[in-house]
Length: 255
Image 1 (cartoon, helix red, strand yellow):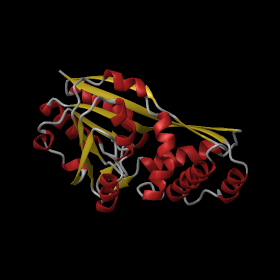
Image 2 (cartoon, one colour; image 1 turned 60 degrees about the horizontal axis):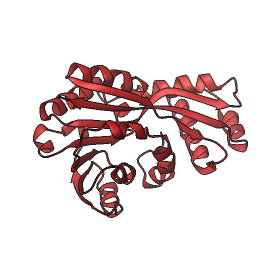
Image 3 (cartoon, one colour; image 1 turned 120 degrees about the horizontal axis):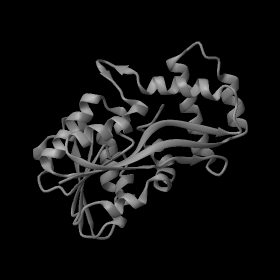
Image 4 (cartoon, helix red, strand yellow; image 1 turned 90 degrees about the vertical axis):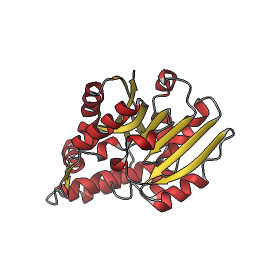
């Protein structure tokens, strides 16, 4: 989605993210949790959502490959009993040694940006380290708009194809990520629990809904330039629909 890693987009989506995440999975996270490593931390929204739901003291290692987002995140996680540090690096470079002393690994809206091999490697690292993982808001390829329009299914199919695109030599999993991750983590020896965590958008969240629509349609057009969707988009923006955007939350526990 256009701008998905920008500070403005991440800030716009944070309330919808917080409302969608499956809070009941937090109760299943093995305790104690004192050290958390958040992969692809963005602006730090996962820490702001999860840290208040865990016992203190906590130390969060906020990891991201974008130094600007990392600086923002480490500056904007201010929670009593919670300390933070930044770690610059890509999730695909995670090693067992990085998890020394870590009780929980988290990420948000990340698994669908990975390949099969990268998820296999991540599961292997977590299994070797014996660290539980809570992965939230992985795209599931389920979008419903109310009122519906005939073009909806065409846009959805093109968007899903865009999510599964090949970047360099990397074929992204997109909406296949949740199901693939379940198999990968179970194969690595984890007990896996999933929950649906759909976004609920619409006229009550006009800025986010409009920006999501632009990104959704834009990605579809990028995937299939033959699609004539300008009229569709302008109509949707003029009368914002109610939208459910499917995601999946996943908890993997080893041992």
